[in-house]
Image (cartoon, rainbow, N blue to C red; front, side):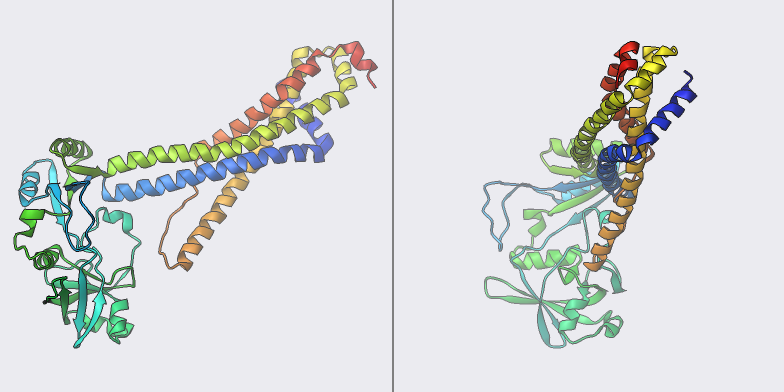
Length: 419
């Protein structure tokens, strides 16, 4: 029996009982649909993360000071540090040929009480670190700039429209406020207060904080808050952002800094951890569909066994006219594989359509929550399609081995006498 005849006969046998074949195929469809949807989610999320990291550059390093673990939490104070990020360290890094730039950062303590003074009125101000983010490319879809500049220089202040609304200003008034002199009033636990002059440099949309200022200005506030004019020398910076010339250079810098006892994070290290986590996640998600396929394989085996009983006389006739046991076995294996392949095709298509719908739904919900996030979170790659189809056909093949062997063992005379 030629391959073409074998496929034609197998397809004809499956179309005899269309409802039973369809019901058997449903189990494969559900399993493949689950696998394609879950794995495509993992691929999409991983790809979006890769794009974000690549936009920043894997050669970016983030350095932190070493803090004593036993230090008590004090919202008004500073935990003791055993390794400081000093100006000397910055000079050493900038002197290296493999370093492009070093950017220091300072954070204001949570317990610091700050007010914005404008038009003779004061409103409580909550700072955010818009002047320096660790990995800016990962936060491209943040609040939009409404007027002015994105990052303040020394003496410039970023504010949000929310805090300006408290002073009675409307959105159409915002552009006219750029360059407006204001004051930040700092109140210490000692009962003292100090006003620092600024100019409004930029205005952002509403967000979780409402002011931001440049690192030199934060240093002035910290020196007054801690009553320490040598704050950086005594406490150091809170973080350093280092851009290396290449990924290999970044690895060398990490080794050098780690050898000196500093805490170093790199995008490559974070990316490696994310990739490992995504592999585990994809495996767990795919296992749900695999369990569904195992259940579906039982249905295929049951269908093929019933087909052996129903077609016993037919099998006997085929053997009587010269069909070999191997050909009978191949016929039933092909039928089972075709059921699996058909379910795989339908399941892959439905899984892709479900991913498209879920991606649209997720983005719609995020827009409804006023979160400007874009991306494709469900990606059906070519290897996922091929793998799903091969896996589905393989499940059908394995499920059909026992019924095929049973059909091949039937004695021709017994089969012809079967009623």
